[in-house]
Amino acid sequence: MLYATYIDATRDALAKVGVTADDALTLLVYAALDGLVLHQLVLNDVAASEKSLARLRQMLSRER
Image (tube, rainbow, N blue to C red; front, top):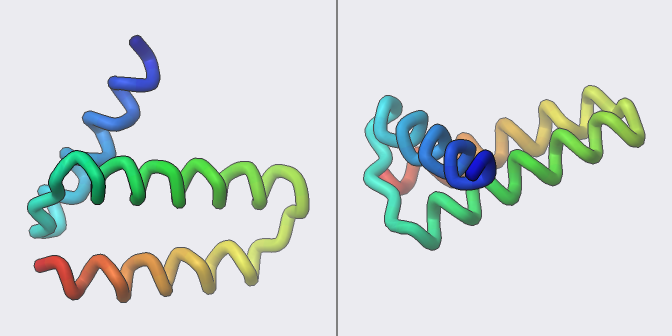
């Protein structure tokens, strides 16, 4: 299933930056990224997307 592949890729990416994510955190991060992609496609608001990604990175840095 393609969706499961995306979730696995999210978990792998988190592990590469030192975040050991359980299923809930992995799904939360995937959903946030998926939503930001949609937001960017629909509104084309690069500044808002970059600001949101920076905030997500900041939040995840606390999980290391």
